Each structure stands twice: as C-alpha cells, then as structure tokens.
Image (cartoon, rainbow, N blue to C red; front, side):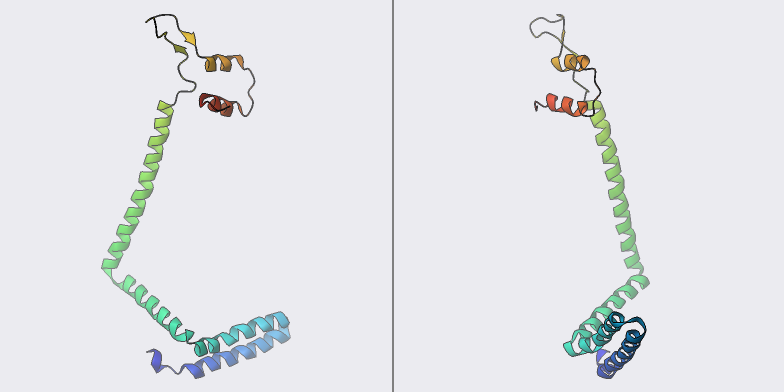
Length: 158
C-alpha cells in the first residue's frame, strides 16, 4: 500500500501549503509564529527525504491493525477482562494485607511493655515497675517528640 501512493508530490504540496500559512502567520502574528509554522511546514518533506515517512507509515499501519484486531476479536476482549480481574485482585489483596498488618501491629505491640516484672528468683514475689514506665509516669510535659523519644529509648538508641 505504501508504494501505491505518490509521496513526493504529496509531501511537497503539504509543505507548500504550510509555507503559505507560515507567511500569513508571520504577517498577522509576528516573526515567532511565522517561524514556528514554517518549521512545521518543512517536516513532511524532511520525513520523505530521510525515509522516516515509510517508518511512520509502518508504525501507523501496525497500530491500526492492532486496534482493529482488538476491537473486533472477542478472544482479545476476554484477555482484557482477565487482565482487569487480575488488577482488581492485586488491589484487593493489598488492602486486605494492609488491614491484617495494621491489626497485627495493634495486638502485638504493647505501648511500653509490661508494667511489672515478676522476680526471677522467687515465684509470686513482689514486682517492681520497669524504669521506662516509671520515667514516663514522672514526665508531665506533652511535647511533640515524646513518642519518638520513648521509641528510641525502647530500642536502645539515645
């Protein structure tokens, strides 16, 4: 099909029409608009002379063939539906996993650890409060970094 079209006269005609429009743009809207229109007008001839026109034709024909094959083929639509189902399943599984992780963190992560520790030597002996809990009870201020400081202290970072 590409060989059946006389490309040189077609490209030369489009370029000539663009040059006329570029001249009119130059007179009405100034030099910048005229030069921009002239640049666009020269592209068809440049595409023909460099051989890019045939590459563009091949790309366009392939894209049109793909789209018509997609639109008219029910098997392809089944593939599109399966792809959509897979995407929905990925999203839903991510949401469910995120909920599971957030619920697991709430259950597993105590705020400051146990408040009392039984004595290792004597079962049932009196318990002593942990130093981190005692320090938290002594601190009265509610500054913005208190939670971060507590986290760092629990991790052994000071």
